[in-house]
Length: 108
Image (cartoon, rainbow, N blue to C red):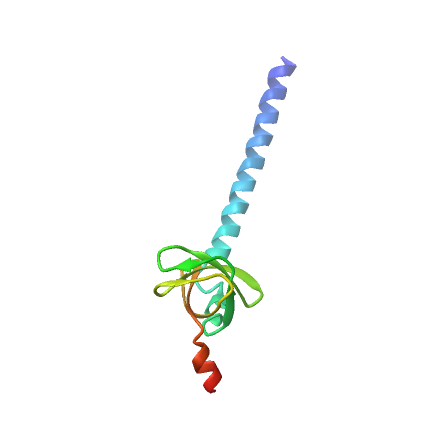
């Protein structure tokens, strides 16, 4: 009978560990998904960055802004890799960007 006792003891311990991991994971997820937690995203509006992978209105690409890589879409058309962009909005987990108008920057 020692094998049955050992089996049930180990099963109980494993179940408690799994429960603890699930609860901890859920708490971490809730903490990071809480509205207002990622205030840094709102600070990105108006920041200038660089396109790392081509972006279109219907296909996300990668941009480098504020020292980090972000998923992004553009308002309209397409933006090639290497071009400078400006962040105009933040939606869910991605940025909405537009190309930097070079002529406006030269006139200032």
